[in-house]
Amino acid sequence: MIRTWLNKYFAVIKVTWVQTLEYRANALVGIFAILSGLLIEYVLWKRIFLTRNVEIINGFTFDQLIVYIFFALMVGQLKSSWINSFEMIESIRLGELNKYLIRPISFFFYNLSLFIGYNSLYFICYGTMSIAFPFLFPGLAFQTIYSIIGFITFLILSIFISYGIYFMMICTAFWFGEARSLLVAYNLANIVLSGQLIPLKMFPEKLLNVIEYTPIPYLVDIPVRFALGYIDPTLFFEKLQHGITWAIIITIIGHIIYSFGIKRYEGFGG
Image (cartoon, rainbow, N blue to C red; front, side, top):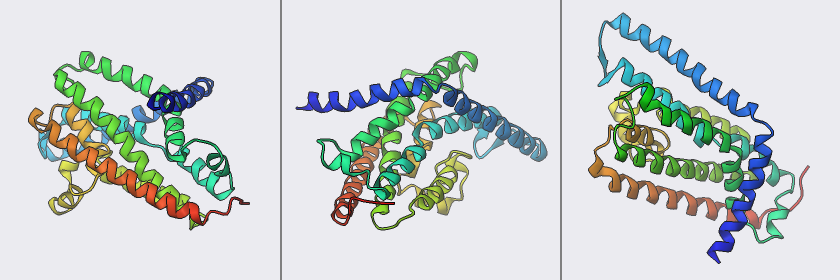
């Protein structure tokens, strides 16, 4: 039963791999976006450090901060599924959701498989860059096996939680004709609040206390801090337990919203 379920969705991933390999330029553009963004951050923070004439800001040296931002941009790219989300919203608006209702396939897991398949080239490219990173910049990332395992584990969790949040917002399309604006607003807020531009450690304490009680740290900050060795190894299972709990809660809420939405779904659009 489980094997059949896995084979079904892995087949979807394999098909999207073939499609993705036809558009290899997308991965190159994505890498260019990461490197250009890192260059901008480098210039800005270099000027800040020089202007303030300091070597450490909020516990980060300049090199540590740039490495953090590099990994944050990379994780942010890997967990982003807004393009796939727009397609899911269109399938609800235009009545294309019917094909999921008449076949033994889950709207949630089918599109998760598409997301993984579409981003396969990014996984390969950024995975190669991550492997090479300790050799190019020794002592700044992946210093122990623990940091490698922690990064991979929480990166997978980050991707799933991020997709689950997108899924909840996508399901609002059952009630609102134009749900894409909600996704755009979320993306803008997520870039700032998840630590993709600056580490969460630099946020005001009151705001940080609020963020800590949400799944936001698991989207970027925690995977990156594991990669850089900033989280004590003894906290691995505690963080993992909290992350899995958030993943389960978000998935359940998403499916509840979907179940209510499907009851008012009319099966046609325009």
